[in-house]
Image (cartoon, rainbow, N blue to C red; front, side, top):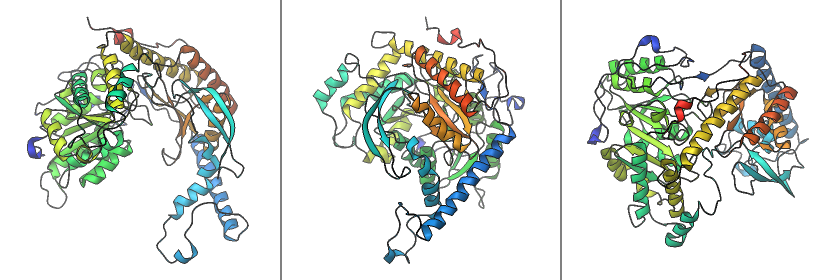
Length: 549
C-alpha cells in the first residue's frame, strides 16, 4: 500500500468506491450512457459518448506507402547533395568540426530537410490582426521550395479561424469589455519585474487566486505566469525518487516533461483504459518498488480533462473510483476543459457531477477559454501552501503581468455571472451548441472524427501525408484557417486536421466551413467513414443548459 504524502501536502481519501468490472471497457472507449451508480455521484448524462472509428485497411496501406515513397526520394536527394548536384540549405557542422560529436542528429535532419520542408508553408503563418473568429494573414510565397519565404505585401482578410483555442471568444478587442484591463495597465504598468516571493505580489494576484478557488469549489489556488511551466515545474515538487507516476499515453508534453524532471518512476497506461490503469495500480500496490519491493512513497495518476489531439474526455468517475480503491493521488490537467465544458464552464468535474475534493491536484490554464496567459494549481490549502515554498515556478518565475491578471478576472467573473450579466452563460451555451452542431454535420457528411460529443476539439482524420498538405492549402484558398497535424505529433497512420470550435463562431461561419469541407472532402476523397448518421441529429441536450434556480 502506498504511504501517505510526505509533509502532509497531499492526503488521499480512504473512502471505498465500488467499481463494477463489467462497466470497464477493455479498449478504453464506450458509447453507452452511463447511469448513476452507488457511490459514484455521476448523474445520468450523455457525456460518455465517444467515437474512435477505424479507417478501412487500404487507407493504412496507402499511408505507409506514401511515407515510404517520400522517404525513398529523400535518400535520393541526400545522394544528390552528397555528390554536389543539389545544395543543402540546412545547418551543418563546419569542416573543422567534422571530428566532433555531431551537433545535429541525422534522422531529425533527414525528416526536416526531406519531409517537413516540402510542406512547411502550412505552419507558422503570420497573423496580422486580432485572432478572433476571423483573422487576417500576411501572404507569403517561396522561391526555393519552402527553404525561405518572402512576403508579397498582400493581406488575406477575414479568414475564418478554426484553429485557435478561443473557446469562449474572450480573445476580443471590444473596448467596453476591456476597459478594466486598460485601467490596470495605467495603474500597475505592463509588468511586475519581480517574483511574487520578493516584491511582485500584487493585490490583484491574490484576488485572482481567491476567485479561481471559488470558481472551482476548492479551498485554495495558486496562479503562474506560464501554462506549460505550471505542469513542468510543479510536478517535480510533488513527487520524486521512490514515487510512481501512472500517466495516460496521450498526456501533453508539459506533463511528460514534469514527470521526467521529477525523478519518479513513470509507467504509461492505455488511453482512457480503466482495465490497463487498474492492472498497473494492483501491481504497484502488491509488488512495490523494483528490487527492494518497498511500498511506493506516492502513487500519482496523471490525466487530462480533454485531450487536445483526440478530443476525448477523461473517464473521471471511473478514475476517481480506482484512485480511492487503491489509495492513489489524482492530478487532473484541465487546460482544454476548464471553461469549455460543464453546465457553467467549471470543467469535467461539473460535466460528470463529481466532487472537486475528490481530485487531489487540479491544474488548468488561462490561455484557452479565458483569452489570457498562465495557469493555476488548485486543491487543499495545505497543498497550495506547500507549492508556494517548493515549486520552482512559484519561487523563481516573474509574477503574472497585471493586465493579463485583470483579463482573467474579468473573464472569470463574466462566466460566473458576477459582472451582473448573463453573457458568460450565453457563451457557454453557444459553445456547446456549436460543438454539437459542427460534430453532427461532419459525421453526417462521412468524415471520421475522434473524440467526445461535448469536446470543442474536433479532430478530422486525413491519414495520408499528401492529403494533409492538400487539405490545408485548399482550405486556405477558401479563406478557412485550419491546423493540420501529422507524424511525429500523431501516430504515423493518423494524421489529422484539428478544428477548435468557439462560442464566437456564428452559425453562418460554421455553415460556410462545412460547405467547403464537404467540397474539399469530395475532391480529395477524405470521407472514409462507413457509419450512417441521422440527417437530423440531437444537437444538444436542453437539460444540460438549465440555470440553477
